[in-house]
Image 1: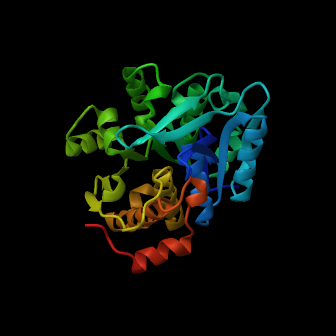
Image 2 (image 1 turned 90 degrees about the vertical axis):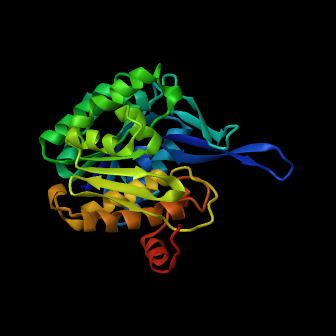
Length: 321
């Protein structure tokens, strides 16, 4: 039985490395935001499980083993020999920002059917987490929405990451419609500043936050990279600076942040309505430290810190101004 169930994509990240001779190589790592969240929560002592589909191939077998090695329940993971595991190549564009190239044609994650979801896993959990990449295609779109609707009907906390990956959508307009379509089901949302603007169509942060709160969302986490984060609810808005670290790779840092934040909510034993801003600030400080530490190593899951490392940074680290 898992307290947190993540639903969505799990894939292979091939991360670009420049060798000493100037040649480019790619290192294989497990990826996929919902899977990253599940692993982070598990590493921090909260039982977690994953629902999704990968190919019954060498990549899918590797991904399953990564979940097992990190204590994530795999009863909801399907290995399907009809489809291939999705691959993503991660490099940098001309501006120095991360750039993704996906090989997802007939990808296993996008071919998850609702009938394949083990609803018993949702019955037994406290929180269900999902991301927007399941909404790019059918049948995964109907599977994800159906599972989340089921979880909502059964009183589970719902968290959502509208993860913006432009190349996976036919158009930005379609992406916005899909990402907005599930907001009424959501209790907790994590967005970057760009994703906040995309999903609300508002450039000013305060009206954008108000728009999300008016959909029924109760907690908003706005990640700001090296600047930290903003936490908002109907009880207030707080800006929290993050910790000074030597950043090497930011891939998965936002997922580590959110996994840590959700783990703290589950550990608190409180309902969403019982959480005060003092609670959310403490959770966000912890999540900031987690996200910062995860940027000091390459890869998403390999870089995830321990609870002890997070608490040490909070106690002894310096806050970026």
